[in-house]
Amino acid sequence: MKIILPFSTLLRNSALQYRMKIILPFSILSGILLESVSAFTHASTLGQRTQAYSKRNVPFLPRGGSLYATVEVETAPIQGMRPGTSGLRKKVEVWSDTQNYVENFVQSLLDTAKQRDPTGKIDTLIVAGDGRYYNNEAMQRIFRVCAGNGVNKVLVPKGGIMSTPAVSAAIRDLDGGFVQGAIVLTASHNPGGPREDFGIKYNEGLGQPAGEEFTEAAYDRSLELVSYSSVTGGPDVNLNADIGTTFQITPSSLVVIIDPFEVYINSLKSCFDFDMLRSFWSRNDVSILFDGMHGAGGPFARRLLIEELGMSEDALMRCNPLPDFGGCHPDPNLTYADELVKKMGMAPDGSADESIKDLTVLPTLGAANDGDGDRNMIAGSQFFVTPSDSLALICDNWEAIPHFAQRGGPNGVARSMPSSAALDVVAQARSIPLFITPTGWKFFGNLMSSKELFDGKDYTPFLCGEESFGTGSDHIREKDGLWAVLAWMSIIANANKDVPANEPVVTVKDIVKKHWKKYGRHFYCRYDYEGEIFCPI
Image 1 (tube, helix red, strand yellow):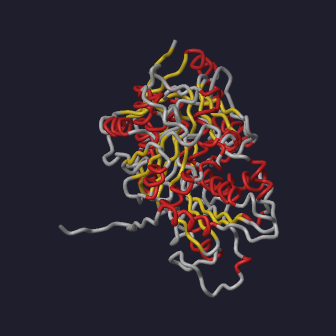
Image 2 (image 1 turned 30 degrees about the vertical axis):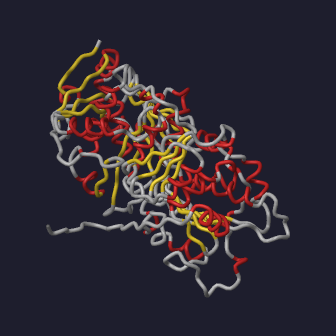
Image 3 (image 1 turned 180 degrees about the vertical axis):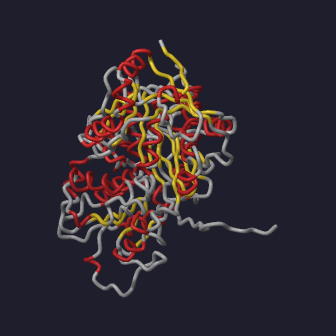
Protein backbone atom coordinates (compact mmCIF):
# COMPACT_ATOMS: atom_id res chain seq x y z
CA MET A 1 0.00 0.00 0.00
CA LYS A 2 1.27 3.50 -0.82
CA ILE A 3 0.17 6.79 0.71
CA ILE A 4 0.68 10.06 -1.16
CA LEU A 5 1.18 13.15 0.96
CA PRO A 6 2.43 16.67 0.30
CA PHE A 7 6.12 16.76 1.12
CA SER A 8 5.58 19.51 3.70
CA THR A 9 3.39 17.16 5.73
CA LEU A 10 6.45 15.01 6.36
CA LEU A 11 9.09 17.70 6.60
CA ARG A 12 7.69 20.91 8.05
CA ASN A 13 11.03 22.69 7.75
CA SER A 14 11.57 21.80 4.10
CA ALA A 15 13.67 24.38 2.25
CA LEU A 16 12.94 22.94 -1.17
CA GLN A 17 12.23 25.61 -3.76
CA TYR A 18 9.87 23.56 -5.88
CA ARG A 19 6.59 21.79 -5.32
CA MET A 20 6.64 18.06 -4.91
CA LYS A 21 4.73 15.17 -3.54
CA ILE A 22 6.25 12.21 -1.74
CA ILE A 23 5.28 8.58 -2.27
CA LEU A 24 6.22 6.07 0.42
CA PRO A 25 5.30 2.46 1.07
CA PHE A 26 3.01 2.29 4.12
CA SER A 27 5.58 0.38 6.17
CA ILE A 28 8.14 3.11 5.72
CA LEU A 29 5.59 5.84 6.44
CA SER A 30 4.65 4.02 9.66
CA GLY A 31 8.28 3.91 10.69
CA ILE A 32 8.65 7.61 10.06
CA LEU A 33 5.50 8.47 12.04
CA LEU A 34 6.60 6.26 14.93
CA GLU A 35 9.87 8.14 15.04
CA SER A 36 8.28 11.54 14.54
CA VAL A 37 9.57 12.90 17.82
CA SER A 38 13.19 11.88 17.34
CA ALA A 39 13.13 12.64 13.60
CA PHE A 40 11.70 16.15 13.84
CA THR A 41 12.68 17.42 17.28
CA HIS A 42 16.17 15.92 17.21
CA ALA A 43 17.09 16.53 13.58
CA SER A 44 20.64 17.41 14.50
CA THR A 45 21.14 14.03 16.15
CA LEU A 46 19.75 12.30 13.07
CA GLY A 47 22.14 14.33 10.92
CA GLN A 48 25.08 13.32 13.09
CA ARG A 49 24.08 9.67 12.87
CA THR A 50 23.68 9.91 9.12
CA GLN A 51 27.07 11.57 8.76
CA ALA A 52 28.72 8.92 10.91
CA TYR A 53 27.21 6.10 8.83
CA SER A 54 28.14 7.90 5.61
CA LYS A 55 31.77 8.12 6.69
CA ARG A 56 31.73 4.36 7.20
CA ASN A 57 30.32 3.90 3.67
CA VAL A 58 27.17 2.32 5.10
CA PRO A 59 23.89 4.05 4.17
CA PHE A 60 21.99 4.90 7.37
CA LEU A 61 18.46 3.51 7.56
CA PRO A 62 16.06 4.93 10.18
CA ARG A 63 13.89 2.41 12.02
CA GLY A 64 11.04 1.31 9.79
CA GLY A 65 12.55 1.96 6.36
CA SER A 66 14.82 3.90 4.02
CA LEU A 67 16.32 7.31 4.69
CA TYR A 68 15.51 8.21 1.08
CA ALA A 69 12.02 9.10 -0.14
CA THR A 70 10.54 8.94 -3.64
CA VAL A 71 9.41 12.29 -5.03
CA GLU A 72 7.77 13.58 -8.17
CA VAL A 73 9.28 16.95 -9.04
CA GLU A 74 7.52 19.49 -11.21
CA THR A 75 9.63 20.72 -14.14
CA ALA A 76 9.23 22.22 -17.60
CA PRO A 77 10.58 21.25 -21.02
CA ILE A 78 14.09 22.47 -21.81
CA GLN A 79 14.92 23.31 -25.39
CA GLY A 80 17.97 21.94 -27.22
CA MET A 81 18.14 18.39 -25.87
CA ARG A 82 18.39 16.65 -29.24
CA PRO A 83 21.30 14.14 -29.10
CA GLY A 84 23.92 14.23 -31.84
CA THR A 85 25.79 11.31 -33.39
CA SER A 86 26.58 9.99 -29.91
CA GLY A 87 24.64 11.59 -27.10
CA LEU A 88 24.00 15.11 -25.86
CA ARG A 89 27.05 17.32 -25.37
CA LYS A 90 26.94 20.78 -23.82
CA LYS A 91 29.20 23.05 -21.80
CA VAL A 92 29.51 22.06 -18.14
CA GLU A 93 27.67 25.16 -16.95
CA VAL A 94 24.62 24.18 -19.00
CA TRP A 95 24.41 20.85 -17.17
CA SER A 96 25.30 22.23 -13.74
CA ASP A 97 23.57 25.62 -13.70
CA THR A 98 20.36 25.03 -15.66
CA GLN A 99 17.69 23.90 -13.22
CA ASN A 100 16.77 20.23 -13.68
CA TYR A 101 18.93 19.88 -16.82
CA VAL A 102 20.46 16.53 -15.85
CA GLU A 103 17.19 15.24 -14.39
CA ASN A 104 15.11 16.23 -17.43
CA PHE A 105 17.44 14.58 -19.91
CA VAL A 106 17.83 11.40 -17.87
CA GLN A 107 14.06 11.20 -17.33
CA SER A 108 13.59 11.48 -21.10
CA LEU A 109 16.08 8.65 -21.65
CA LEU A 110 14.45 6.40 -19.05
CA ASP A 111 10.93 7.06 -20.34
CA THR A 112 12.09 6.16 -23.85
CA ALA A 113 13.93 3.06 -22.67
CA LYS A 114 10.91 1.83 -20.71
CA GLN A 115 8.61 2.42 -23.66
CA ARG A 116 10.89 0.42 -25.97
CA ASP A 117 11.51 -2.47 -23.59
CA PRO A 118 9.06 -5.40 -23.93
CA THR A 119 8.59 -5.48 -20.15
CA GLY A 120 7.79 -1.78 -19.99
CA LYS A 121 10.34 -1.25 -17.23
CA ILE A 122 14.07 -1.02 -16.66
CA ASP A 123 15.42 -3.36 -13.98
CA THR A 124 19.20 -3.12 -14.41
CA LEU A 125 21.33 -0.28 -15.78
CA ILE A 126 24.99 0.65 -15.82
CA VAL A 127 25.94 4.23 -15.01
CA ALA A 128 29.56 5.07 -15.83
CA GLY A 129 31.66 7.97 -17.07
CA ASP A 130 35.00 8.98 -18.52
CA GLY A 131 36.04 10.87 -15.38
CA ARG A 132 35.79 14.36 -16.84
CA TYR A 133 34.82 17.42 -14.81
CA TYR A 134 31.29 17.12 -13.34
CA ASN A 135 31.29 13.32 -13.74
CA ASN A 136 30.74 12.48 -10.07
CA GLU A 137 28.24 15.24 -9.34
CA ALA A 138 26.06 14.24 -12.31
CA MET A 139 26.24 10.59 -11.27
CA GLN A 140 24.69 11.31 -7.88
CA ARG A 141 21.77 13.10 -9.55
CA ILE A 142 21.35 10.23 -12.01
CA PHE A 143 21.31 7.60 -9.24
CA ARG A 144 18.39 9.41 -7.63
CA VAL A 145 16.42 9.72 -10.87
CA CYS A 146 16.99 6.02 -11.60
CA ALA A 147 15.75 5.08 -8.14
CA GLY A 148 12.74 7.35 -8.51
CA ASN A 149 11.89 5.60 -11.76
CA GLY A 150 11.98 2.16 -10.17
CA VAL A 151 15.28 0.92 -11.63
CA ASN A 152 16.01 -2.04 -9.37
CA LYS A 153 19.76 -2.16 -9.78
CA VAL A 154 22.29 0.43 -10.92
CA LEU A 155 25.79 -0.92 -11.55
CA VAL A 156 28.56 1.67 -11.25
CA PRO A 157 32.32 1.06 -11.65
CA LYS A 158 34.57 1.65 -8.65
CA GLY A 159 35.72 5.26 -8.90
CA GLY A 160 32.93 6.04 -11.36
CA ILE A 161 35.28 5.74 -14.35
CA MET A 162 34.89 3.21 -17.15
CA SER A 163 35.89 3.43 -20.79
CA THR A 164 33.07 3.42 -23.34
CA PRO A 165 34.13 0.07 -24.87
CA ALA A 166 34.27 -1.45 -21.39
CA VAL A 167 30.70 -0.25 -20.77
CA SER A 168 29.57 -1.94 -23.98
CA ALA A 169 31.25 -5.18 -22.95
CA ALA A 170 29.64 -5.02 -19.52
CA ILE A 171 26.16 -4.49 -20.96
CA ARG A 172 26.58 -7.62 -23.05
CA ASP A 173 28.05 -9.94 -20.42
CA LEU A 174 27.62 -8.61 -16.87
CA ASP A 175 24.95 -9.72 -14.41
CA GLY A 176 24.02 -12.79 -16.40
CA GLY A 177 23.37 -10.77 -19.55
CA PHE A 178 20.34 -9.03 -18.00
CA VAL A 179 21.71 -5.48 -18.16
CA GLN A 180 19.23 -3.52 -20.27
CA GLY A 181 21.39 -0.52 -21.09
CA ALA A 182 23.74 2.14 -19.80
CA ILE A 183 23.81 5.85 -19.15
CA VAL A 184 27.31 6.91 -20.17
CA LEU A 185 28.73 10.23 -18.99
CA THR A 186 31.14 11.34 -21.69
CA ALA A 187 31.82 14.00 -24.27
CA SER A 188 34.27 11.64 -25.99
CA HIS A 189 37.31 13.45 -27.40
CA ASN A 190 36.08 16.93 -26.41
CA PRO A 191 38.05 18.92 -23.78
CA GLY A 192 37.09 18.70 -20.11
CA GLY A 193 37.06 21.24 -17.30
CA PRO A 194 34.77 23.81 -15.62
CA ARG A 195 34.34 25.76 -18.87
CA GLU A 196 34.60 22.84 -21.25
CA ASP A 197 32.31 20.00 -22.36
CA PHE A 198 30.21 17.39 -20.63
CA GLY A 199 27.88 14.85 -22.17
CA ILE A 200 25.48 11.99 -21.54
CA LYS A 201 24.51 9.24 -23.94
CA TYR A 202 22.50 6.03 -23.76
CA ASN A 203 23.60 2.57 -24.87
CA GLU A 204 20.97 -0.08 -25.50
CA GLY A 205 20.74 -3.72 -24.50
CA LEU A 206 23.20 -5.17 -27.01
CA GLY A 207 25.80 -2.62 -25.97
CA GLN A 208 25.29 -0.34 -28.97
CA PRO A 209 24.79 3.44 -28.88
CA ALA A 210 21.13 4.35 -29.00
CA GLY A 211 19.86 4.51 -32.58
CA GLU A 212 18.11 7.42 -34.24
CA GLU A 213 14.64 6.15 -33.38
CA PHE A 214 15.59 6.08 -29.70
CA THR A 215 17.31 9.48 -29.65
CA GLU A 216 14.52 11.19 -31.55
CA ALA A 217 11.93 9.68 -29.20
CA ALA A 218 13.97 10.88 -26.22
CA TYR A 219 14.18 14.36 -27.72
CA ASP A 220 10.42 14.44 -28.31
CA ARG A 221 9.88 13.31 -24.73
CA SER A 222 12.12 16.11 -23.44
CA LEU A 223 9.80 18.66 -25.06
CA GLU A 224 6.76 17.46 -23.12
CA LEU A 225 8.08 16.74 -19.64
CA VAL A 226 6.11 18.27 -16.78
CA SER A 227 7.78 16.29 -13.98
CA TYR A 228 10.58 13.86 -13.24
CA SER A 229 10.83 11.12 -10.63
CA SER A 230 13.63 11.14 -8.09
CA VAL A 231 14.42 10.48 -4.43
CA THR A 232 15.32 12.95 -1.72
CA GLY A 233 17.28 12.61 1.50
CA GLY A 234 20.08 10.23 2.37
CA PRO A 235 23.82 10.41 1.73
CA ASP A 236 25.45 10.28 -1.68
CA VAL A 237 26.81 7.00 -3.00
CA ASN A 238 30.50 6.53 -2.18
CA LEU A 239 31.98 5.84 -5.62
CA ASN A 240 35.26 4.69 -4.06
CA ALA A 241 33.68 1.99 -1.92
CA ASP A 242 34.95 -1.55 -2.28
CA ILE A 243 33.80 -3.65 -5.23
CA GLY A 244 30.59 -5.42 -4.27
CA THR A 245 29.42 -2.68 -1.88
CA THR A 246 25.66 -2.14 -2.10
CA PHE A 247 23.80 1.10 -1.41
CA GLN A 248 20.07 0.70 -0.79
CA ILE A 249 18.48 3.86 -2.22
CA THR A 250 14.87 2.71 -1.82
CA PRO A 251 13.44 -0.63 -0.67
CA SER A 252 13.38 -1.72 -4.32
CA SER A 253 16.36 0.14 -5.78
CA LEU A 254 20.06 -0.23 -5.07
CA VAL A 255 23.43 0.86 -6.41
CA VAL A 256 26.21 -1.75 -6.65
CA ILE A 257 29.94 -0.98 -7.04
CA ILE A 258 31.43 -3.23 -9.73
CA ASP A 259 34.87 -4.10 -11.12
CA PRO A 260 35.33 -1.94 -14.24
CA PHE A 261 37.98 -4.17 -15.83
CA GLU A 262 37.20 -7.87 -15.70
CA VAL A 263 34.46 -8.29 -18.29
CA TYR A 264 36.18 -6.00 -20.80
CA ILE A 265 39.59 -7.66 -20.47
CA ASN A 266 37.93 -11.04 -20.95
CA SER A 267 36.28 -9.78 -24.14
CA LEU A 268 39.72 -8.80 -25.48
CA LYS A 269 41.13 -12.18 -24.49
CA SER A 270 38.44 -13.79 -26.63
CA CYS A 271 39.77 -11.87 -29.66
CA PHE A 272 43.56 -12.18 -29.33
CA ASP A 273 46.27 -14.65 -28.40
CA PHE A 274 47.61 -13.13 -25.18
CA ASP A 275 50.29 -15.81 -24.74
CA MET A 276 51.72 -15.09 -28.18
CA LEU A 277 51.60 -11.33 -27.61
CA ARG A 278 53.26 -11.65 -24.22
CA SER A 279 56.06 -13.72 -25.73
CA PHE A 280 56.75 -11.53 -28.76
CA TRP A 281 56.54 -8.16 -27.03
CA SER A 282 58.93 -9.31 -24.31
CA ARG A 283 61.74 -9.24 -26.88
CA ASN A 284 64.43 -6.62 -26.34
CA ASP A 285 64.21 -5.31 -29.90
CA VAL A 286 60.52 -4.31 -29.82
CA SER A 287 58.62 -1.87 -27.63
CA ILE A 288 55.36 0.05 -27.40
CA LEU A 289 54.44 3.49 -26.12
CA PHE A 290 50.80 4.14 -25.22
CA ASP A 291 49.41 7.64 -24.55
CA GLY A 292 46.24 7.59 -22.44
CA MET A 293 45.81 11.37 -22.76
CA HIS A 294 44.63 11.41 -19.10
CA GLY A 295 41.36 9.79 -20.19
CA ALA A 296 39.32 6.78 -19.10
CA GLY A 297 41.35 4.40 -21.26
CA GLY A 298 44.53 4.88 -19.23
CA PRO A 299 43.74 2.50 -16.34
CA PHE A 300 42.55 -0.11 -18.85
CA ALA A 301 45.82 0.20 -20.77
CA ARG A 302 47.73 -0.32 -17.54
CA ARG A 303 45.66 -3.40 -16.69
CA LEU A 304 46.11 -4.76 -20.22
CA LEU A 305 49.71 -3.91 -21.10
CA ILE A 306 51.34 -4.06 -17.67
CA GLU A 307 49.35 -6.61 -15.68
CA GLU A 308 48.22 -8.94 -18.47
CA LEU A 309 51.05 -8.69 -21.03
CA GLY A 310 53.92 -8.05 -18.63
CA MET A 311 55.28 -4.80 -20.05
CA SER A 312 57.06 -2.18 -17.98
CA GLU A 313 55.65 1.16 -16.87
CA ASP A 314 57.82 2.76 -19.56
CA ALA A 315 55.18 1.60 -22.05
CA LEU A 316 52.68 4.11 -20.64
CA MET A 317 52.34 7.89 -20.65
CA ARG A 318 49.52 10.06 -19.30
CA CYS A 319 47.49 7.06 -18.17
CA ASN A 320 46.09 8.63 -14.99
CA PRO A 321 42.59 10.04 -15.60
CA LEU A 322 42.16 13.73 -14.77
CA PRO A 323 38.94 15.81 -14.76
CA ASP A 324 40.45 18.30 -17.22
CA PHE A 325 42.62 15.72 -19.04
CA GLY A 326 45.66 17.57 -17.75
CA GLY A 327 44.72 20.63 -19.78
CA CYS A 328 45.08 18.71 -23.04
CA HIS A 329 42.49 18.10 -25.74
CA PRO A 330 41.97 14.31 -25.51
CA ASP A 331 41.70 13.70 -29.25
CA PRO A 332 44.26 11.13 -30.52
CA ASN A 333 45.59 12.79 -33.64
CA LEU A 334 48.79 14.46 -34.82
CA THR A 335 47.77 17.82 -33.38
CA TYR A 336 46.74 16.87 -29.84
CA ALA A 337 48.86 13.75 -29.29
CA ASP A 338 51.92 15.90 -30.05
CA GLU A 339 53.98 14.48 -27.17
CA LEU A 340 53.56 10.97 -28.53
CA VAL A 341 54.29 12.22 -32.06
CA LYS A 342 57.65 13.60 -30.90
CA LYS A 343 58.54 10.45 -28.97
CA MET A 344 57.83 8.41 -32.11
CA GLY A 345 60.37 10.47 -34.06
CA MET A 346 57.86 12.35 -36.19
CA ALA A 347 57.43 15.97 -37.20
CA PRO A 348 54.06 17.64 -36.43
CA ASP A 349 52.70 16.63 -39.86
CA GLY A 350 53.49 12.94 -39.30
CA SER A 351 56.58 12.84 -41.50
CA ALA A 352 59.92 11.64 -40.20
CA ASP A 353 61.93 13.99 -38.02
CA GLU A 354 65.19 13.93 -39.95
CA SER A 355 67.14 15.27 -36.96
CA ILE A 356 66.83 11.88 -35.25
CA LYS A 357 69.66 9.64 -36.41
CA ASP A 358 69.50 6.73 -33.96
CA LEU A 359 66.22 5.00 -34.76
CA THR A 360 66.87 2.20 -32.26
CA VAL A 361 65.78 4.50 -29.42
CA LEU A 362 62.30 4.88 -30.92
CA PRO A 363 59.38 2.61 -29.93
CA THR A 364 58.26 0.01 -32.47
CA LEU A 365 54.59 0.92 -32.02
CA GLY A 366 52.97 4.07 -30.72
CA ALA A 367 49.29 4.42 -29.88
CA ALA A 368 46.91 6.85 -28.20
CA ASN A 369 43.38 6.83 -26.77
CA ASP A 370 40.86 9.65 -26.47
CA GLY A 371 38.92 10.83 -23.42
CA ASP A 372 36.58 7.84 -23.14
CA GLY A 373 38.94 5.23 -24.57
CA ASP A 374 37.15 4.35 -27.79
CA ARG A 375 39.32 6.13 -30.40
CA ASN A 376 42.88 5.29 -31.36
CA MET A 377 45.88 6.67 -33.17
CA ILE A 378 48.47 4.27 -34.58
CA ALA A 379 52.09 5.11 -35.44
CA GLY A 380 55.38 3.36 -36.01
CA SER A 381 58.86 4.73 -35.55
CA GLN A 382 58.91 7.88 -37.72
CA PHE A 383 55.71 6.78 -39.45
CA PHE A 384 52.04 7.80 -39.03
CA VAL A 385 49.23 5.44 -40.05
CA THR A 386 46.01 7.14 -41.16
CA PRO A 387 42.77 5.73 -39.71
CA SER A 388 41.62 4.59 -43.16
CA ASP A 389 44.88 2.77 -43.86
CA SER A 390 44.80 1.22 -40.40
CA LEU A 391 41.33 -0.21 -41.03
CA ALA A 392 42.30 -1.57 -44.45
CA LEU A 393 45.48 -3.16 -43.09
CA ILE A 394 43.63 -4.88 -40.25
CA CYS A 395 41.18 -6.24 -42.79
CA ASP A 396 43.94 -7.55 -45.07
CA ASN A 397 45.82 -9.11 -42.14
CA TRP A 398 42.83 -10.76 -40.47
CA GLU A 399 44.73 -14.08 -40.29
CA ALA A 400 46.88 -12.53 -37.53
CA ILE A 401 43.83 -11.91 -35.32
CA PRO A 402 42.25 -15.04 -33.77
CA HIS A 403 38.81 -13.41 -33.55
CA PHE A 404 38.71 -13.49 -37.36
CA ALA A 405 41.08 -16.38 -38.13
CA GLN A 406 39.15 -18.89 -36.05
CA ARG A 407 35.99 -18.15 -38.05
CA GLY A 408 37.44 -17.92 -41.55
CA GLY A 409 37.78 -14.15 -41.71
CA PRO A 410 35.39 -11.21 -41.46
CA ASN A 411 31.86 -11.85 -42.68
CA GLY A 412 31.37 -8.14 -43.28
CA VAL A 413 33.28 -4.85 -43.12
CA ALA A 414 32.17 -1.23 -43.05
CA ARG A 415 33.52 2.30 -43.09
CA SER A 416 32.07 5.74 -42.56
CA MET A 417 31.36 7.76 -45.68
CA PRO A 418 34.07 10.44 -45.09
CA SER A 419 36.90 7.86 -44.85
CA SER A 420 39.03 6.83 -47.83
CA ALA A 421 38.38 3.88 -50.14
CA ALA A 422 41.38 1.95 -48.83
CA LEU A 423 39.04 -0.59 -47.24
CA ASP A 424 37.00 -0.96 -50.43
CA VAL A 425 39.80 -2.42 -52.53
CA VAL A 426 40.78 -4.90 -49.81
CA ALA A 427 37.18 -6.04 -49.35
CA GLN A 428 36.77 -6.51 -53.07
CA ALA A 429 40.02 -8.44 -53.40
CA ARG A 430 39.16 -10.70 -50.49
CA SER A 431 35.45 -11.12 -51.35
CA ILE A 432 34.17 -9.58 -48.11
CA PRO A 433 30.80 -7.74 -48.09
CA LEU A 434 31.39 -4.00 -47.72
CA PHE A 435 29.10 -1.31 -46.29
CA ILE A 436 29.49 2.47 -46.30
CA THR A 437 27.54 4.27 -43.57
CA PRO A 438 26.83 7.80 -42.35
CA THR A 439 29.00 9.07 -39.50
CA GLY A 440 28.02 7.54 -36.16
CA TRP A 441 28.92 4.19 -34.59
CA LYS A 442 25.25 3.34 -34.12
CA PHE A 443 25.05 2.57 -37.85
CA PHE A 444 27.82 0.00 -37.49
CA GLY A 445 25.93 -1.39 -34.50
CA ASN A 446 22.90 -2.03 -36.72
CA LEU A 447 25.06 -4.06 -39.09
CA MET A 448 26.78 -6.04 -36.34
CA SER A 449 23.44 -6.86 -34.73
CA SER A 450 21.44 -7.26 -37.94
CA LYS A 451 20.45 -10.80 -36.99
CA GLU A 452 19.33 -9.95 -33.45
CA LEU A 453 17.68 -6.63 -34.26
CA PHE A 454 16.18 -7.20 -37.69
CA ASP A 455 16.21 -10.97 -38.18
CA GLY A 456 18.61 -10.31 -41.05
CA LYS A 457 21.88 -11.80 -42.18
CA ASP A 458 24.60 -12.40 -39.61
CA TYR A 459 27.64 -10.33 -40.66
CA THR A 460 29.79 -11.33 -37.71
CA PRO A 461 32.71 -11.51 -37.30
CA PHE A 462 32.60 -7.88 -38.33
CA LEU A 463 35.22 -5.15 -38.76
CA CYS A 464 34.51 -1.45 -39.06
CA GLY A 465 36.03 2.00 -38.71
CA GLU A 466 35.63 5.70 -39.32
CA GLU A 467 37.75 8.64 -40.37
CA SER A 468 37.81 10.10 -36.86
CA PHE A 469 40.24 7.49 -35.49
CA GLY A 470 37.62 4.89 -34.55
CA THR A 471 38.14 1.16 -35.15
CA GLY A 472 36.37 -1.87 -33.77
CA SER A 473 34.82 -5.28 -34.13
CA ASP A 474 31.73 -7.19 -33.06
CA HIS A 475 33.18 -8.35 -29.71
CA ILE A 476 31.33 -5.28 -28.41
CA ARG A 477 29.12 -2.67 -30.07
CA GLU A 478 31.39 0.38 -29.70
CA LYS A 479 34.63 1.42 -31.28
CA ASP A 480 37.51 0.21 -29.17
CA GLY A 481 40.88 1.94 -28.94
CA LEU A 482 42.68 -0.87 -27.11
CA TRP A 483 41.25 -3.48 -29.48
CA ALA A 484 42.90 -1.60 -32.36
CA VAL A 485 46.20 -1.48 -30.45
CA LEU A 486 46.08 -5.25 -29.87
CA ALA A 487 45.23 -5.77 -33.54
CA TRP A 488 48.39 -3.90 -34.55
CA MET A 489 50.47 -5.69 -31.93
CA SER A 490 49.24 -8.96 -33.46
CA ILE A 491 49.95 -7.83 -37.03
CA ILE A 492 53.50 -6.78 -36.14
CA ALA A 493 54.11 -10.05 -34.28
CA ASN A 494 52.81 -12.06 -37.23
CA ALA A 495 54.99 -10.12 -39.69
CA ASN A 496 58.04 -11.01 -37.59
CA LYS A 497 57.24 -14.64 -36.81
CA ASP A 498 59.98 -15.91 -39.13
CA VAL A 499 62.48 -13.12 -38.44
CA PRO A 500 65.43 -14.29 -36.30
CA ALA A 501 66.00 -12.39 -33.07
CA ASN A 502 69.30 -10.96 -34.35
CA GLU A 503 67.77 -9.56 -37.56
CA PRO A 504 66.03 -6.17 -37.95
CA VAL A 505 62.33 -6.38 -37.16
CA VAL A 506 59.64 -5.75 -39.75
CA THR A 507 58.36 -2.30 -38.80
CA VAL A 508 55.00 -0.54 -39.05
CA LYS A 509 56.43 1.43 -41.97
CA ASP A 510 57.47 -1.79 -43.74
CA ILE A 511 53.99 -3.29 -43.27
CA VAL A 512 52.16 -0.22 -44.57
CA LYS A 513 54.43 0.29 -47.57
CA LYS A 514 54.02 -3.36 -48.52
CA HIS A 515 50.27 -2.84 -48.37
CA TRP A 516 50.48 0.25 -50.60
CA LYS A 517 52.53 -1.69 -53.13
CA LYS A 518 49.83 -4.35 -53.30
CA TYR A 519 46.67 -2.19 -53.24
CA GLY A 520 47.78 1.34 -54.03
CA ARG A 521 47.68 4.35 -51.73
CA HIS A 522 44.52 6.30 -50.91
CA PHE A 523 44.39 9.92 -49.77
CA TYR A 524 41.76 12.00 -48.01
CA CYS A 525 41.69 15.16 -45.90
CA ARG A 526 39.88 15.80 -42.61
CA TYR A 527 39.32 19.35 -41.40
CA ASP A 528 38.51 19.97 -37.74
CA TYR A 529 36.88 23.27 -36.77
CA GLU A 530 37.16 24.27 -33.13
CA GLY A 531 34.55 26.36 -31.32
CA GLU A 532 31.84 28.34 -33.06
CA ILE A 533 32.13 28.82 -36.81
CA PHE A 534 30.27 31.59 -38.65
CA CYS A 535 29.52 30.77 -42.27
CA PRO A 536 27.89 33.69 -44.13
CA ILE A 537 25.47 32.64 -46.86
